[in-house]
Image (cartoon, rainbow, N blue to C red):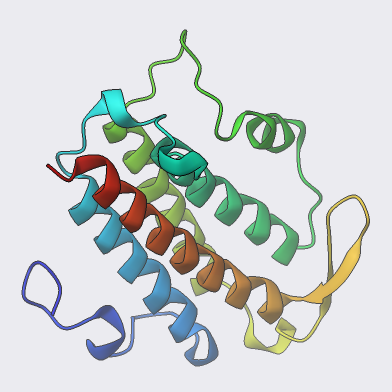
Length: 172
């Protein structure tokens, strides 16, 4: 059971307007969003960029969670990354002393990105799922469904890493 005593998202039934073959992707992303929000509710901003045992910081994971969804879903639509996406990628994991990134703003960015990609899932035509899409400057071939499933898998992997890092940083 999740923190709010509901079963995990995938056990709550189909999501409206999400194609049947993409339900697991949507469920995984919604589960990740719930877990991130529950985990980060009272996380102190002064620990965002700490790297215990040189692992990735909490700030990195939160930036990366939003950024990787943006990039993978762009590729799934057949688009190359924009200049702003490339600039964002270059700053992932880097503390910006002039920036105003807080735990709250990073979590809200992730929440907004999940909402954006869920809207994209709702409009994805299942007949396109096996179409080839290219990833990165090297144009590595994948498929629409490969990119969408990887986005869910990659997100859940980083949420797990985030959970461990938060636990290490906040244990008393």
